[in-house]
Structures are given as C-alpha cells and as structure tokens.
Amino acid sequence: MPDEKLSARQKNLLFILANEAREVSNTRLDERWKLSLTGKDRTRLNDLGLVTSRKAGRVFVHELTDRGWSRCREELSAELPDRAGSFGAALYSFLGTIDRFLEAKRLDLADLCVPNSRPVPESDEDGTTADRSDLETRVRAVYEDLAGAPRDWVSLAELRPRLGEVPRSEVDDVLRRMDGAPDVTIAPEANQRVLTTADHDAAVHIGGEANHLLSIGRA
Image (spheres, rainbow, N blue to C red):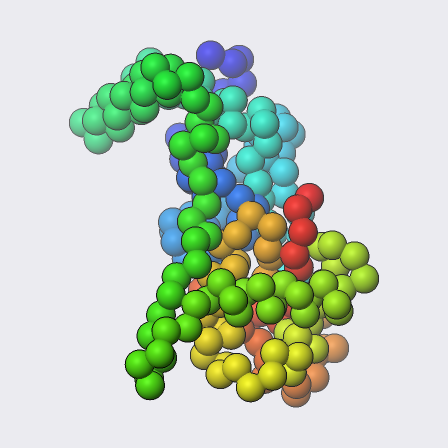
C-alpha cells in the first residue's frame, strides 16, 4: 500500500471517478452520487497527483490520473480498515473479488470501468425511430465548424440554429447524453452578466442547472 493516508470519503471519490471513467463535473457528482470534490479533499487528491481538476465555467471538473487508477487498484487488495463495520466488510470482500478477476484475466481496472456513452435509439411520436447517434454526429460536426480549436467553448446559442428543425427536446436529450462522454464538457457561463436572452433560451438544464457552453476534445 502507498504511504499516503486517505480518508474514507477521499477513497470513495476516487472509486466514483474510476466508475465514471471520464472527466466529470461537481454538478454531475452531486446529482448522481450525492458527493462533490471540493475544498481539502480536492486539494489533497490534486497534491498527491491522483486527480486533475480544472474550472469549466462556474464549476470544477475532475478526472482520475494514471496514478489515481493505480491507487484504486491497490485498494482492491487492501486489508479491511479498522471499524469498517458489516457494510465495509461486505464492500472489501467484493473489492477483493474484483481484484482476483482482474488478476486472472490480466486486465487493468480501467478495462473494467468504461463510460456509458452508447447511442440509444428512441421512438418519435409518429412511430418512427430516431437514432441519437446521427444527431450527435451533427452536433459534433457543427461544434467543429464553430470552434477555433478542440476544447474551445462554443455557446449553445450559436450551435442550436445550425441544427435546423430538429426538435429542441431531441437536442437536449443528446446533449445530456453527450455530457457523459469522456471528451465532452457542458457547463454554465462563468460570467452571467454577459449572457443574452438567446443564451438563456438556448441553455440545456442538467442536474437542475442551466448550462450555456459546449466543449469537445480530449485533454
């Protein structure tokens, strides 16, 4: 085991980031896991080189580093912590099972944890089937036309009109699904004073928050 001591909360956050297997915002962490990586926990995990964090709009987004992945893998075979209780005992028993499986298959933990970004077909009201992957391809193409470089911010107010007559609900659904992809970040505008009526109207709501900007591209 490494020398650095981590709290139970910090270990939980590492495993959540491993499960997400992508860059993820505090908004998403709070919405899905009821946790966020802030304050001393963020500073600690950043200083140890286990997690990278950056500001995207008004929120921080985080991603596990290679060292963070290694730290999670080491925890799979760790001894049961003192005062772990029955839930902790069950958890570490299951982590040990995962460790043995990875060893037997000669896999890394990252091979097991992959983001769920598969396209999901859905039926329109008229009974036809709309493949979201086609719309996602269009969104990515429009983004590429508007962005000066990968990972640049593009406003949804600029992007939406370029998608033609696609219903807003379908665009919103695809944007929300894309937000789960490892190369996509959707975030609020940091300076709310610069927002126009068009920006407010074009925002997509994720986790109860209005988001105005889209960034695509791996770090």
